[in-house]
Image 1 (cartoon, rainbow, N blue to C red):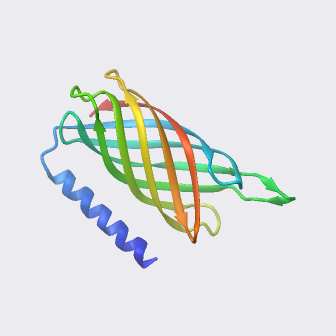
Image 2: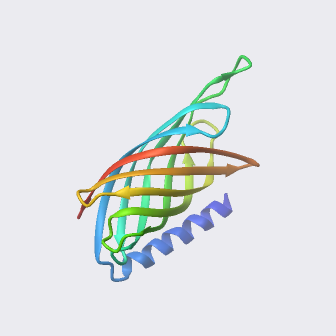
Length: 167
């Protein structure tokens, strides 16, 4: 628990540092995530998120993301695997490959997953992604989201469909 508290304090300090610098624009995006779990105990993952994006330049931005993700458990050998839900809190970097600041992008985020289901606790969270953002605000991406904890790595490959607008 002490490690996760230290990590979260560091993440908050980093975000505060980015927010206090001269950023050009802020964008808010809301999205829906549909995922295929990478561990055998779950059949499907669904979630929603909100992402603030702070533009450092036209091609580079700092995303801060939160939301809710729910893994649906399944029955294996007559044992019911319980559902697993968590609230992610992530920050990272998003780089557009086109100088216009739209089009194809790559993104990486790290943070914490705060479990909301019984005995789930908090775990480290990482999420590389690729996507395409249109200038009209539509954003379509594919991400891997991994949650390593206690020697296990629960994760998902998810499709994110989102809409973003400038604030």
